[in-house]
Length: 188
Image 1 (cartoon, helix red, strand yellow):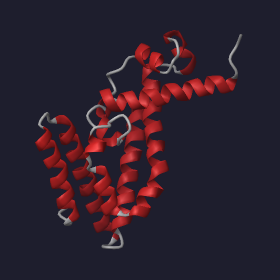
Image 2: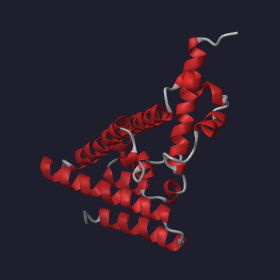
Image 3: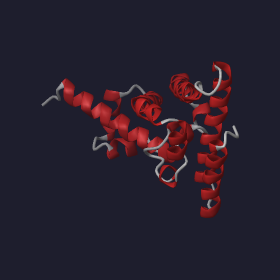
């Protein structure tokens, strides 16, 4: 008995969602096709009915992460830059890479990704810069706001990357808190 087109679309989206979470946790090279399909409650053999290759799945998962980010942008913009910084640089965000920022989670891997995956990632970085720059424009001219937005994003991502990477809990918290404090003072 064949599956309906809707069932196939639902299964496809389930695989992409699982892959997006797993790639954030383990990196782009981490989970294999069999593991991802099993986590999506599908058979390994069905993979190629949904994707031409693993690279296609990676690219689609990165695109999916980008669209997840864009859906939340309006809410973040309404709260202001100080709130964005406070919510981004938390231990909860640090400890939940599967649902956290794809820019920090994929930063080390994406440079070795396909053009399609890198394009989706680049789009997300540009979106962050535009969002932060828009929140800063009231305080300075457009060119200055974009420069500060690039520096702010770099500080946020760098702090989160380091906080996740170190195995010293105190240092991890200090990295998050120090950058939060400096950004709050307009250091960047």
